[in-house]
Length: 228
Image (cartoon, rainbow, N blue to C red):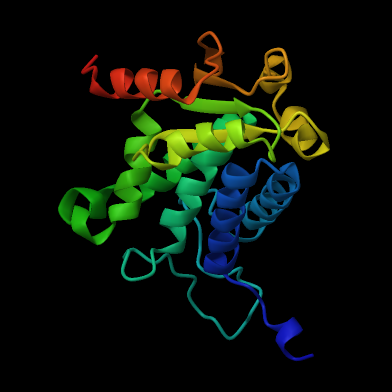
């Protein structure tokens, strides 16, 4: 159909990847991660400005588009560059690909003038900057997706505002294999004697496993209230 021949723009890639990463965090199904990685690699190939940094809104393949722009306003819909930067940081925290953190940092830097002069124009980009400069924290929930104890631990995370924390549900079955294959640090994180376990990690250096929702809640609340 004619719709199939419409070329996707940066926004299309970035927003779809953001949704896929939300699915990864809520389901632990590595198939969504594989799709997010593939689309991000294609997005970088089509839109990344390796000279000026950041991403163009269009691929440049349409000759009727005379100037390739970079949107600099997070309105009702955030700018594609803001969403792309946040996606790259989240993916780096999940898959340990530091080159994607570097592209995200360059993207944020490219919009530094606007962030300094009018930070209210780019709130999501400002959030990406905060994410970049905060030490990486991952919370891995290793447990079967259909186990109510796993759901209870995930509920502890979803009930809290943790803007610079990545949640990684790690099903011990097939759906978690892509996550483990993408990030070797995850391979040794597993349920304990059949019980779901939560691992709170700083750049994949993990604390001892926690076996109850209450213990996870206490650790998160204590660490978030600690000014250090």
